[in-house]
Image (cartoon, rainbow, N blue to C red; front, side, top):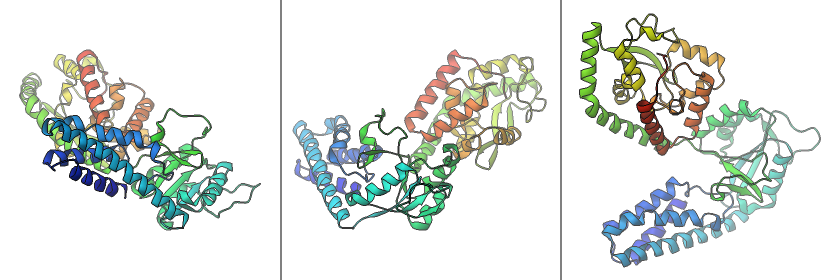
Length: 426
């Protein structure tokens, strides 16, 4: 809905600011892209324009320098001014109409409250007292009901059943208010909801204290702050795959001659194939042959050996490992779709099975395609380092992934390859 409102506002702005031109249309498209990327097309529970005005004005200003070379100065500033006035004006009108419709019982969204404690009961009461928020709670989810207070809504099931309940009752919003279950036990259920249409909000446990989160990113239920969970970035992952294909093709063209020379030297010195192939787990139930340059004189049992003695490396192999150049053939894996440039490092099936049973959260790494480098490696966690630390960094990367984070990881990996060293793990 808000996307259509913004399209209408920017279309009118282009029309009234002067003679329409491809540059003006491009500017309007840039504003829409910034608004979408910053989450400004998500319909909030609490409809207050002043909390979003700063981000809207920033989105209108950011594309302007790119449009200035193709627009006359007066036209450009008129376009930006009309865009600001119309986007803010139409959004203000839309919010007023939505609040009025909600008070009359129109455009009301079905919701669930997870947690039957004091906070959950308070949220249910406030939603009933403030119909302008537009939520109609259907009931509670929790492992058990409180013993001392009667619930104002029915208890529909356990918190772990959240994905099934969302689908069964066609829920649009979920308010998470401290259920009985441990947070760690509820993470899988919350992750399973990301492919569904429902927006999920967390009530901060210390909601009386201000968090260092921009207010524009928060939502609210009559004075109770809500932190929205990130949705699954489908469009972003498509962009990530396109970037992988382009970058891998360019890098192979640039480093192809170097790779051929290294492969020839390895072949001459060892008398064996320069490419070492090994089965690795690169995603959920996905096992592929990952390519590397051969660095060891004798690989022994590479599928079940965790560490490798430095004496097993050839002199060239030690340099290849420390410089990360032995990973260059994995660019072919990226082109095939087996891997990504950035992601959790692929593991051998023997150890993947072992770590899955021993380390909490290890299997969660497989939610994203494995990478040549990753957030753990960018923080020095490679070789014979703590697997628990690596799991924590890998899962953090998946939760907070962005194109910019990939760029940061690639730069840090490049710097580390130039100035750092590498452990002796295969």
